[in-house]
Amino acid sequence: MNHQVLSHIVMCACTLFYMSCTSCTDKPLSGSPEPDGGHVLADEMEYYEFAPQIMESTKYTVKANGTYIFVYPTIEPHLAWVGAGEGKVKCEITLQDAEASSVVVHPVAKHYEQSFSDGKLTLYLEAYDRVSVEFNGDMDNPLFLFVNPIDREKPSKDDPSVLYFEGGKVHDAGAITLTPECREVYLEPGCIVNGTIFGRDVNGVKIHGGGFLNTYNCARSDNEFYQPFSIALARCENSEVRDITNLSNSGGWESLYTNCHNSNIINVKTLGTNSAPGVKTNNDSMDIIGGINVHVSKCFLYGHDDCYCLKSQKFKLKGDVDGIWYEDCIGWNVDAGNTFEIGYETNVNIRNVHYKDIYAIHSGTGTSDLRRAALSIHNGAAGTISDVTYENAYLEDVMEFAIYLACLKHNYNIGYDDEGNALEYSPGRIDGVTYTNINVLGVRKGKGRCVIRGYDASHDVAGVTFNGFSYLGRKVTSLDDSIWTIKRNYSDINFN
Image 1 (cartoon, rainbow, N blue to C red):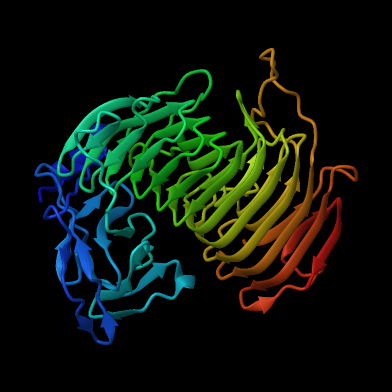
Image 2: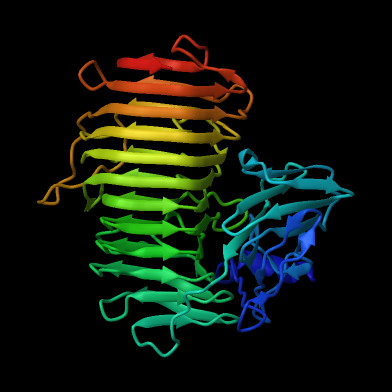
């Protein structure tokens, strides 16, 4: 491929992420699963085709169960997708533009079966697996490989209540506004939808399919949301977002869910890149601001600020937080923010938040330390944060702090009162956090420390329990360990 053409595409915002794919046939390929060296290969495969105008990566080639699949280049990660039924997907990955001398597959803690020989990685995955493949230590342009489940929930193209975007096409949709009459968006595997999705006060929103939402150069939104977004849902209870990939190169929030009670976010891949090569662009991957009974599972988030971010009040967004579950979630915050974050804007109480089987594959940092961490609670307002649990957490590459627990003052906007006046800072508390089976697997030189700091004796960090804390292969059993760099205004800290 002509490199001048590729460079022009990369630099042009409107084609930053022109990926498209569609199944090779109307139905998945099926038949009897074939054995492969003791593995039972997937009984069904769904291969995605790309629209004719889409250019392919010249960096990676990927075969899935013997068939080449399309690899799409962005200015940062390169991306590949395939759909699979029950069984294994044998992925054969080679690096085209250099000699491959080493490779790491994240999350390393998932222990994928793999082999590396003569520059080729052979990797066995299955449905819902999401990996970052990094040859020769390359974190600037890794390969993200996503194995989706077979798409079995295609609605009718003729249903007027559904916005149906066909695969194999590029759709310039612009701003998509959901309504009670049209509250379902289906992105067929292989489609590219250039635009944003917005919903306000719509019950039962459904956004699904293996396709791709491409949001670029997005302006700031209305006076409720403030930030640019790729997906924004406000007060859309009983909603579901699943299986899609969305990307934005704008500063702000890639996806926002505020007061979307009783909702599910499943197998969503949300990616935020810089707006252009070398241009620093802070973008949160997923913000939840207010929410009751919200489940986030099997997601993969990548961005240049916070990944999984939970707040209770910011700007005009406000709501109780009671019952948020993150399970089997993978995050990579590139050079700012936190991987799994509660805070900073927490003027309303936050309770009953649970993390299970979570993977911080890279927890990035800027040029100086600024409270960025893999697992963080930054209570920056008057609310109390309580009943938070972490179970089976794997911190694979900590570049700043590993764990940061703090009540502190900051310069972010914590919200407005009913008359529109900016709220003044008032300290809150953290009371009741349990860590079970926490594993710090890798830290950068001089980094990876931990912090517990309350604001003062009345606004402290209290009731924290560690049930198994492994740090670079050794057990942490007290606050006397050298990993704790700041310790003040705390009480009732226990190690079991």
